[in-house]
Length: 140
Image (cartoon, rainbow, N blue to C red; front, side):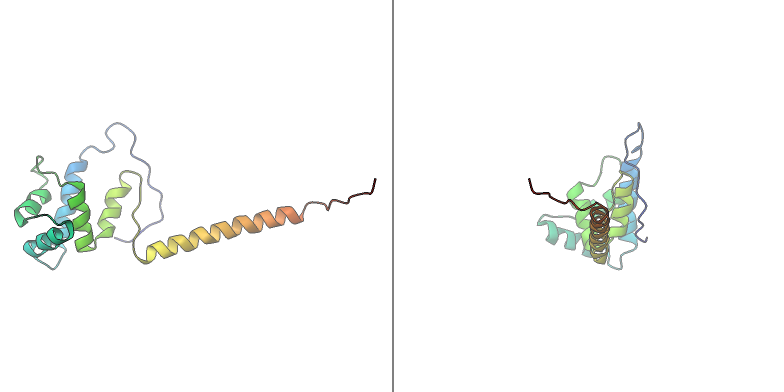
């Protein structure tokens, strides 16, 4: 999943986030499935990061779309994102709410774009000031 500069629409209408719990579960399953480590190793890494126990059985439950009563807590979901490095999955989830996730070198590229936009604004301001007729003061 590559980062895109498309601006997502904020979730605001009735039902915009219907099924969001299942999508979170699917995102957990995807991160687990596409990681080279087994679930025990991933659970151990999450446990270290959070300083609390996360077991393979817990992450199995979080990955199941059918187990509605086992939604993953936000802290654990973000720990899984960090442990697996799957900021692309986080971005896809965030886009559903109207936000974006940037990471790594994307942050520098975004900052560069911001600086360039500021410079463009300053150049435009400079042009508008140069177009103003000079003020000549007359002695009284």
